[in-house]
Amino acid sequence: MSEDASSYPPIEPTTFDLIVVGTGVPESVISASASANGKTVLHLDPNPFYGSHFASLPLHQLSCFLSSHSTPPPSAASTGCDYTPVALTRRSLYSDIEISSYSPEIIGEEHSRKFSIDLCGPRVLFCADKSIDLMLRSGCSQYVEFKSIDASFVFEENDKKLMSVPDSRAAIFKDRSLGLTEKNQLMRFFKLVQQHLAGSDDGGGETSKISAEDLESPFVEFLKKMRLPPKIKSIILYAIAMADYDQENMEVCEQVLKTKDGIDRLALYNASVGRFSNALGALIYPIYGQGELPQGFCRRAAVKGCIHVLRMPVIALLMDKGTGRYKGVRLSSGQDLFSQQLVLDPSYIVSLPFASSPPEPLKESLKVSDNRDVKWKLARGICITGSSLRADTSNLLVVYPPRSLYPEQVTPIRALQISSDLAVCPLGMFVLYFSALCKDGNEGKRLLHAAMDALLSLPESGCPDSGTAVQNEVAAEVKPTILWKALYIQELTVDQFESISTTPIPDGDLNYNNLLDATLKLFQKMYPHEEVFPETASPENPEDDDNEFSLES
Image (cartoon, rainbow, N blue to C red):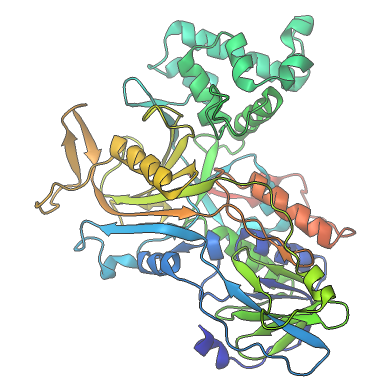
């Protein structure tokens, strides 16, 4: 990439209000919002594509990106000016990478470019979540189109089959997997939640409200108090409230979901169902992949005057010799650029000089902040198949609750199947994304393999893959056959520096809410007196959001 950068003409101007390095979702949101506030912004990326760790890539490019390792940067020696260059290097966020192709004739170089594979999958958007509101507010929504996820399922521990997640009154009554008693219990529970959120007692007084004591209690205990059966509890905890750990085993549960937070997540799910008339459920997915989101925000930033330059690595920070404060960056082309603020993507590492002791102000400025004690990593998996998990459903979400695959499984596993009608793969093929929190690569691989083995099959050894599915002798079901797969472990924590803003790393959540919260908090810290995406000229119908959002049927 440096060779490409050296042939670029010098960037003009050379001084900006903000320089952003990396084009992931957080960096692109900050860039677009700063541009909307009238800041001069230069947005750089060392990659030849937009999206960084949130990109959607062809198969061959995905493999190269996952396997790439940082290289020593070109010399960042001082030029004798009033600033000190401090070398920047990039570390890979991915390890334990396994890539297997079982049908080279099908998944060959000819078809590789027909795929658009998410690096941060599985990920969807709730119709009522913060990312949708932010896209509408920023105007980014005009650059991205969506389609709905057809259905959600839970992997049932006893039968080892998929059980549908009912997301409405009609769905509850139509669900054949639920008995009449279970349907009534679920209906009563949802009615109580709706009354609580509406602040209405429906003539029932305090008994129809959730008490303050219950709201502070673990959500799983509240569900037990409501006498919900295990199957219903599992659906609510892991497929609707999206709890991250085994909530019924306090010895292994790293994060207990409180009732008040569980109710908020149910409220998000409920508000998402029916927000858009042509959405089949609560979840939607961008056509062409999640990489469309950062590109949409980058386009919005460009409209407001932001300058974007790809294939342009940053090799050093320029720090004031006297104060130790940030002044600018040095590009691999050799050019020095200056700005008031800098934002780095989470893969960058500051390399302090070892030969001589750096000045005290510089050491203080680049001191690594204390990170929270993050013991967990994220196992991600991608499979390409030639048939769907469900013959009648193309785009679907599957949640494997804790202990549904084996007794030691302490975290849920999430899987998302996306079909060719979302323009991410050739016609007749499907892409499945898997993710699970884990403590190391071995545990992560075990989780992913168990989830894949439960629903998918490898081609029979020594036999050409002439079909798209094989028969499962035990369950007498047809399982899709894996044509290609990738497994990798992603870091969940990065160094944070005292004087340099670093964006959040892709998390294990299904949506972007927590990631956007951290991003907007960073923006407000940088610009405490500026509004995130300030209102521009008043639209004719400022409250009519739906007219600005493109969701295909």
